[in-house]
Image (cartoon, rainbow, N blue to C red; front, side, top):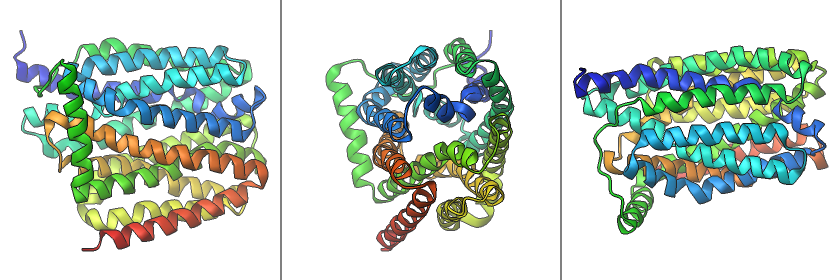
Amino acid sequence: MKTPTQQLEKNIPKYYVFMTLRYAAFFFVPIFIIYLTSKGLTLTQIMILQGIYSLLMFALEIPTGAIADQLGRKKTIALGSALGAIGLLSYAYASTFTGFLIAEAILALGTVFISGADTAILYDTLKSLKKESRFKKIQGNANAMGFTCAAAASIIGSWLYTISPSLPILVAAIPYTLTIPLALSMREPLHTKSATLRETTHLIKEGIIFAKTHKHVRWLILYSSVYSAFSFAMFWLYQPFLISAGLSIIYIGAVFALVNLLVALGAYSANRIENIIGEKSSLIIIPALTIIALLLLSTGSLALGIIAIILGQFAWGYSDPVINDYINRHIASHNRATILSVNSLAASIAAAIILPLTGYITDAYTLTHTFMLCAILLLTINILLSLARKP
């Protein structure tokens, strides 16, 4: 029989497999916006759905983060994976805005059960093994593996769409299902937990108060939420941009394969690059690359758009392990999942504002207007954040 330490060690390769399977669900991503428009939805409606998704994340993020801290991370991850599979199946069979809204709600619930808990189980595993210094490298490598798998799934997804528009979404539910037994097989690291309602409420309040009062964590959460919201909006606009630039649907999967490989490269290189350039330079470069990408996309040129995708997606892959590491350095194990969920909560609020706005501007005006406005807003907000950070 394996010792508890050996069982904890097994969490690391299992985490790699878990992340790979999660990103394997990218079968539907390259054609998602195209699929919804084929069902009669406007871009404004699609972005409203994504905004509602973010609002649901806002409502559910902290309670589910607290549940993960109390009842065990692996159980909440498994439940989130099950709901993710159900949500995708619901999406495949929906035909009205209301149907898609229900599917979106199920997906949101699944996502928040996983959000924070997956990162927390890895970090506390490493902390129990006295190897927390490896967190940034391991998460970066896991993301790299996941996005490499997503690249292959993207190419297959476009091909599946030509057979049947709903087929990529149905196939995407399979890897989600496979993550359920994998999550349950993990060893739960030691952490403070309680099952009473009073202690649950206290844990939630404690996480929020810590995030509000810790100056550096608060700044990182604001920074991360703004960046992720604009990156998320830009990501969903890639499909209408590529179509408007004249690219055939069958080739969009290849572009998204490139997208995922670039995110994988950014994630894989994160530890090495951050060790060289440090925190201050990293926090400048991440939004700078995204702003440049938005400006290039605003030209409407397919060639410049591909360059923009390269820059934007590399920044996205680099940002996740780096920013998570910066935040994790300042929080304790007993409320780690809750505070990481506060970070996701802030990102959800920002996305709920930015996504519908980008959809409306695109429908009312053009993609060029949307990309240009996003670039100006992101630049302005980051300048204000930089000024606020100075002592």
